Image (tube, rainbow, N blue to C red):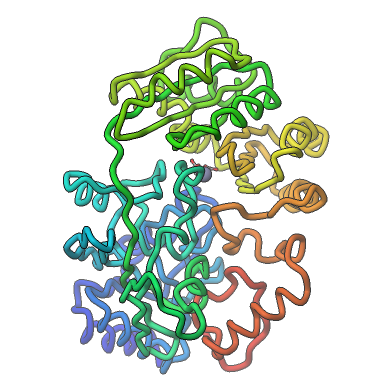
Length: 460
Ligand code: 2HG
Ligand code: ZN
């Protein structure tokens, strides 16, 4: 089927206004947030509900055309945009913004895959609830995208990754059938856990359309503190003490270089009189004021300086030093981003070795989620010819110290060919078997997560 004919069939399902073929209208869907990953879509299709998603997938399957699902397009590993060669249908879920009533007994709510995280927060907070996952990209990141990537973010130390906060999903499978696992029953031992199979599947097994989310009580009293420290070792020592506190919700680190760049690009004033090697942003929250228990820990801790915010607005001001890293780095260039986890005991050594591994081939900025050993290694000024070698060097070191090459951003297109570094051949074979079973024609997000295999008959 040619593109015009496919476009006409799709328009009959979603309406003319929601099939975009004009390159100017497609452009914002075709390049990801980093600006690094880009590819031309055959068409951008914007269905309004599950039935339209199912019909879109069926029409594309019949035409042998691959489909790339997209939420808020805030992903960082190239999974949300077409391949460089292009030709896939870009299926935007952003119109699926429904939100159901909160079920306080079950502590759950059902949402459309295209609902932005910030809108969910605005819906549940006035009712005394919270979604356990929070991200700096909350205004654009959609729940469907967060589930597809098993996003982590800032509150994992208390609430776990997205996986722990999802009770069920609805999804359109590659053949257009609809899988409904929205019941959200806390006890339901009937066969394979298909919800968890789809969480983190990065658009390669199904298109997520709705989700049943777990909610947690909104904790109104919070204290935020920014600590200035000598070293990552010192930060880990404070973390070990902080982890005794039930109220700990956030423990984020960054370094002197990162802070200087954030101040330069954002115009924020310096948080302390002098720069320090390492900073740790912590937040405690509770129904009762956690300020005192946090102060008790900090009084005993080996910190150079502390700024404490008791008011929400001051807390947001301190959090901005951490949250504005991504945009500040983007303002300085297109980074090579390596989101990795290392065991905590290896973390200081890994960061110390980084300059040696890079051997002058990049300007590194390292920050992230300390409690999970999740480092966001952002590399600026990498010559195109060095990108592969630099990536290999860093990821191979991660594997050597027992870490993971993707902590919370997914594998995407960026790391598919490096998957073998932290997944065994047996592991990859099982993943391939699942993919073959659920998407035999390889039409969902080809090239993402698993390295592509040549497949006669499948067109992009
Ligand atoms: C964060 O923690 C995000 O802010 C983005 O995961 C990290 O920009 C990055 O590398
Ligand atoms: Zn992160």
